[in-house]
Image (cartoon, rainbow, N blue to C red; front, side, top):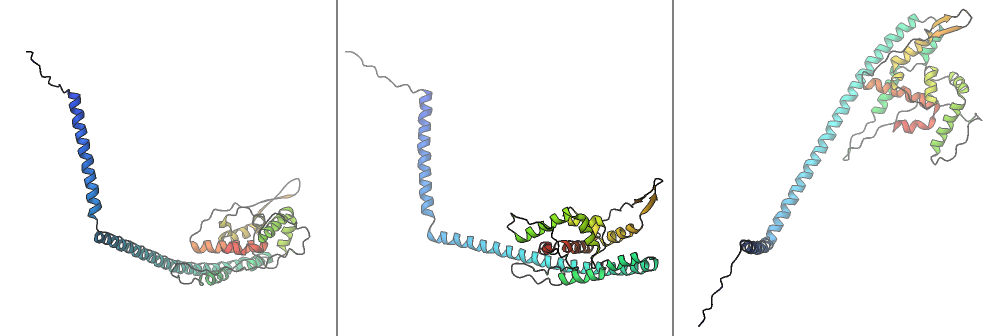
Length: 295
């Protein structure tokens, strides 16, 4: 009689760890499935209505706060505009007083008719003050959208009439009619500067400017707005009469012009005056630029 030996299976460490990991994976999957089922079944209609109500009320509160901030910004901008206009008016009054004093001194010191003509042609601070105040006084109250309307600045001097000139070329390829007219005038000035300079000198109503400024504006080149400040215009006109003349031994005369001093704007009022003076010169040459300068 033979004995049958019983074989005990030997479980290795690797097999044991694999078995444990499989059990843990199954348990985790079962737990996640139960959580999903519980979460799906846990949100009822009342909870959803409550969440929607909270979101809606929060959104409305945010919108109200945004509207309040916009209203505060509009009111702050309005107050700033009022203070700015008060400052401009004060500056204008000071400049007007200084201009009256300078006109009185210059009238006592002037010794020739040319200086009198320059003073007559110069734009006075009072007239510029009136024009800018009329434009800025048209500032209307802001509506719900905060939009404001400004009255455009009007021209001071008549525009040059180009109808009698036969040398103006015809421009093609422009869809904008005003742009084509402006380009025609610009080409005429570039090609006929000598004639244009004589025509500008014969204008009865014009500001007193140097030929350099006239040429710069006519050619559409870069213009430093500081050159149109009242101080700069007065000094430029004075320098035209105060050039140093040097006679050469071979004959002829050399004129030495004084170097201009750099100036800066003391406030927005001086900037507005300079821009208005620049605008008046541009509109004498280019009639179609009025809307562009007022935009």
